[in-house]
Image (cartoon, rainbow, N blue to C red; front, side, top):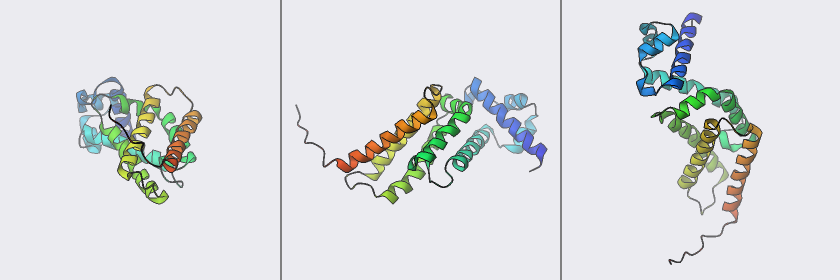
Length: 194
């Protein structure tokens, strides 16, 4: 890609993220994006069909970076400590992007995309480790996805109150305990109605 074209596309994406930190996604216009990026409307439309396409491309760039830098060999997010550490480090380095995407009102698309990325990694991993017969794969996956995304979201939106090493160690211990519990549990106790 021509350097000028790439430069204008990055300027538009940066301008969009600045506006997202100030306004609701729905209230942002192409004119505002163009003005903030110091380009004309036509340049915005040269790169993106609309603001939804712009948002989606911004997300895709970040997720591709996350996948390339954090999980090249080990697999995905929750399958190794190293991958988990790289994930938290990436989130920390790109905290402003993730904060904006996670806190913007009415923008659940980003959270949904995070859940999809984690679901893809977990599905393969749960198949490879052979899940305890007592545990339903769908329920286990939904639990881990909710826990993982919820923890990442909490950490970012609370201005990262703990260092990455602490987050990884704590999260890894919780995952190990879950695995230990599933291996040690015989069956649910009988419940008596009161």
